[in-house]
Length: 338
Image 1: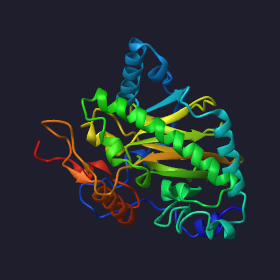
Image 2: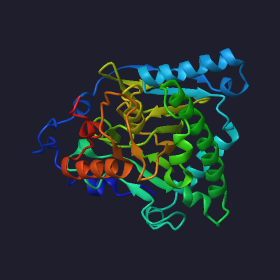
Image 3: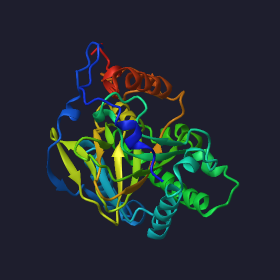
Image 4: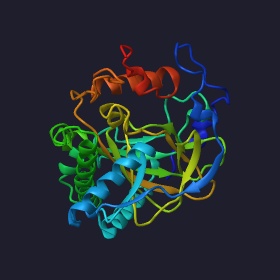
């Protein structure tokens, strides 16, 4: 069932990350900070007020969403429109598909070629590894799947409802930043977004290997459904904090593109997943991404970032990961004219 982690990982040396690139630290700050001081509950926002609330309630809800996105970059939503029945079915179906033998998963024809991924091929030391496996599924794979299995129908239901929630939240954030809210329905269409089903197997060296290494998301926003095992951590006030699971809530986080588009009003916050020595963890994430040709343009007379296309951003991230072993992200696109 598990990918051959032990067989591959034992060949790696426990050496420090090194690089010869200028203007990039020898090791990212987040990689060197391991202590977690506390477990916290992220801000919880009842988003049903956006639909059913009176005008004042709707405005209060919008302000809470914007404030959490400015101050945390992460928040939780309840009464979000995705039923517990759909979420539970999603969890059961992904457990079932991950229970298949590794050889079957790695050659699966359920989705397009390359959808199944595990580990970190570019890793040169343990701190660059991700002790996890995933199905990275474009939304079009789900919509076009003619094999009407319980998995495909459950994914379609979850994806459609997550998509509607993402549009609603993105439009609120655009409005509160003075931006054009129609941007998302024009640029973040179904064939540019995707789902990712994750499994984090038990790890024999939880203090040395991440489930998912520290990173920010290369999208506009992410909607995460996780189980109750825990392990998600994020940076707040220059320290790592653990996120307390909430069975009623979905987790929302701001991605790099929203930070740039809002001219740093909203924060794309570094986060990671820690491994567990005895218990596996499951999660499903929806990623709201634009087309590759979409141009990310700061909403300011003094933009913090130069204009860039999503294709350019993705290519730069992939190049940095290949060369350095980690993502640099938005600092590569700073506007040096201001």
